[in-house]
Image 1 (cartoon, one colour):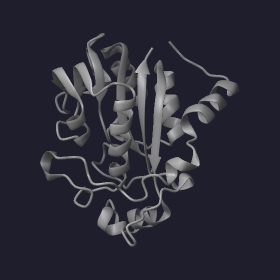
Image 2 (cartoon, helix red, strand yellow):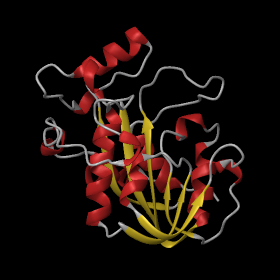
Image 3 (cartoon, one colour):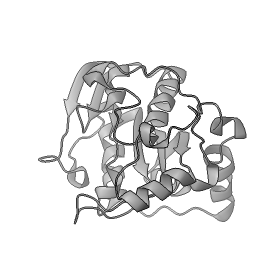
Image 4 (cartoon, helix red, strand yellow):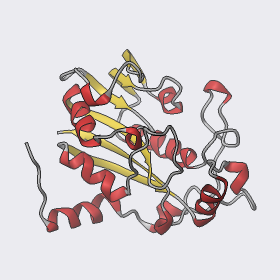
Length: 228
């Protein structure tokens, strides 16, 4: 079934869900102590700086929406640091391979589905997000992060990137309600990304212990969405 939105619905989504207040872009310029304990993770040794802001948003959002404890959690990558902050009675790991999100065969099974840095590697992201929608129980949630700008990697399985608005509309088209949106980026990161063809880390960006998040230079974005 095709889903279409008129201009007013798109504008409303932008101003109510996607466009973030000025305070969002300054509140984490000075990162707090890293809360992640698994895998000796730290802000400084993670391979890509935007994930730091993503993790902090994730922790804040799941507390806000009572998702720190769920019945059945599904995830695609067992080393995602976000998993540390969600407790569940049942867990289903769906790594690729052998699992392919385009052909996921679950219906009304999960309460929370977490998959990160994956959408850019899906040749038909709408079909995959629709399958995730079907896999969730009514009222279930999904969280993902995705690059807006990125260097080619895992070729030939690198197909796209998403702006925050594109990410929001992808999930709305699949039937989801957008609950929260986040983003990070700055011009220095973009310069280093393109010049080095590597993912800049905290150490690559740190100059005065203040790292800016520039609204118009978004590099990665993330979403928490809910099955209606």
